Length: 198
Picture 1 (tube, rainbow, N blue to C red):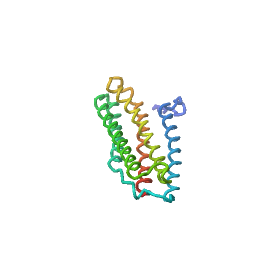
Picture 2: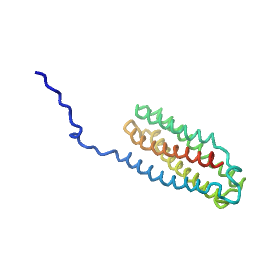
Picture 3: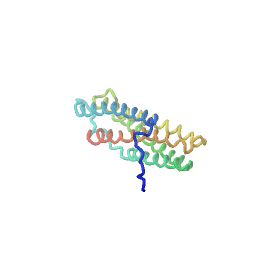
Picture 4: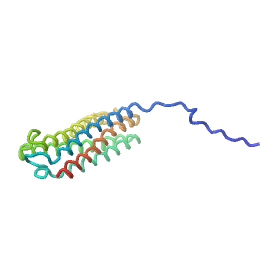
């Protein structure tokens, strides 16, 4: 006589709390997304309504190189986490250092753009409606890049000093969520400000 195997009922398995780090980062990203939506909507609403110049078409150039650097940094961070999961600390440090460099290039490019806009084109936050919304939106994003870059630098210091190993891969996953969010937001900002806005 054959017996029928009994499959365990999924309802009998104990419920496990979701990871606090992932949930916390998800909540932060949702809150930050709401802030960015407000700034993007304000920028779109006031686009072209300023009476005085300079206008976006007159002063903005497409920051293609810095955009490529920032978006590439998501890939290098991904490979850093993959290296950490495989206990390849050297690869982790190298890819993470590349991520930091790419993020720094983006910030330097933004700083150079702002310097030119302020001191050559005379566009400040008080110049006109475009200046106010431009510096508010792009500045908000740049602030998030700075925060993310500081966290990545801290992780790199820990990695270079031997305080990171495979068991920290999940923490790097959580940190990478923030960085990928910052990169995704830049795609929206770039599209609205530099493509549609011009």
